[in-house]
Amino acid sequence: MNELANVSPPPDVRVLSEQIAERSALVRERLDRTAGREVRVVAVSKSHPPSTAWAAALAGHREFGENYAQELVGKAGFLAERGIEVRWHMIGPVQSNKVKVLAPVLGWWHTIDRSKLVRTIARWSPEGTVMIQRNLSGDPNKAGCTADEVEPLVAEATEAGLDVVGLMGVATEGSPQLAAAEFASLVAQADALALRERCIGMSGDLDVALAAGATTVRLGSMLFGSRPGSANGGPSRA
Ligand SMILES: *Cc1c(COP(=O)(O)O)cnc(C)c1O
Image (cartoon, rainbow, N blue to C red; front, side, top):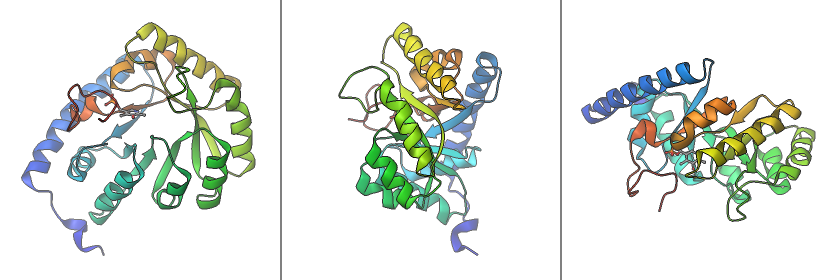
């Protein structure tokens, strides 16, 4: 029996947990109203302390997303020590040399965008659950493969024994029209490839993503408020 498993949360974590529970209930209502179907919510706890993930778990969250390998592994350990079982989603770019430390902890790999990553994940996480990340904006500085690269990557990952469940994408910020078109294109490709998961939508473009057919959304600021060190609570951490 884990010694810490029964550690009760300190008052500040309990208060935070109640806040997160209230915000989560509002998000749920919005999902029910807009999507009218089951949508998986990945709580993006990045750049918040591990105690925030603890509070979110107490509020009922069981799917967590992080952008940085080290931060993900640290929070996963923190929750595991407290006897809390959740599923971890890697939603940030993955360097091949981080696959080994992530493999025992994940979960879902959302950001597969090249062959080398497929091969490395197949080695350390055989039969691992993955999504192919498509670069929706066409901005070469953004992560993700091109539309043309998706199908060969799906084939390669499947061939390597990975469980390819869907496609993931981040839309261009600030234009709902562009985002809608980008999401529609991703959903059409997922349909064509018979992939069930469409992981699209963050706090700023949630409704657009739901309308386009999101099955999984990644929510940070909507659940946790703005991130420490970020002026606007936007998706990037300075
Ligand atoms: C940070 C981040 C999110 C969550 O962003 P919010 O705008 O806070 O909801 C979702 N997806 C990815 C890939 C991110 O980096």
